[in-house]
Image 1: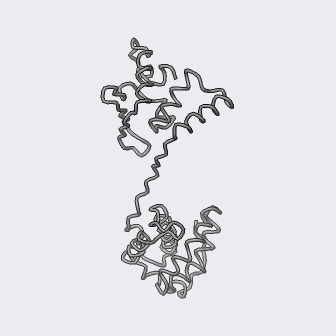
Image 2 (image 1 turned 180 degrees about the horizontal axis):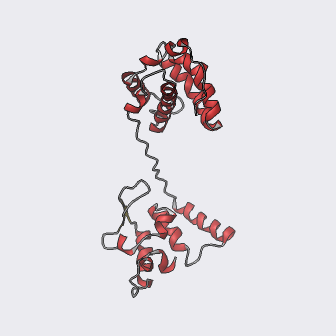
Image 3 (image 1 turned 45 degrees about the horizontal axis):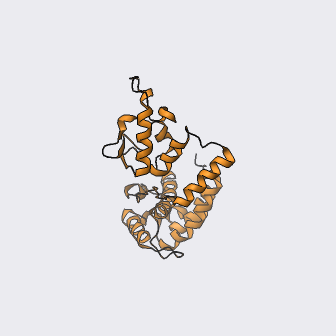
Length: 231
């Protein structure tokens, strides 16, 4: 809920920097989490610098698009690499928050950020343990937690060698496993996309072993889960 205040025409016609400093920062402190407000305070100077001299009404779709393009081409000062899409997206989110508040206060006719697409953020990360790291992991799991046995070993091994999440492994079905082509075909992933996982020799050996020990008599859906073979 936006607090009711007496907004003067000076604020309405002022540039974006005045609105941010006089109105938005206090609003952010009042209504946002401390963590997000801290991010806002980091990003605001950059926005004020880019939109120096712009009134709220002048921050239109063209201006926002130009800001997005400039940020997408900017380099990270520490690494010298282009800014991550997540960073550009976050800066656009702060700008959109500012203009959204101005719109709610009827200082502008619309929020132009809503008409500018945000960079797509891919959070997928590839990180493969080395053979030595894998050996050390099993040592730690066994010595400290005593959980590596014939039931949990397949789950952990498949997790390491397929990249599937725990929930995906525990709900993996035999009709999603193709040992002939050496693939797992998940109906959907976390992002609701069809997922195809190519099996390496280790993962394939584990699944072939499990295939020999699974109950082939039952036709129930739940009993066809890979995880119920020996996991």
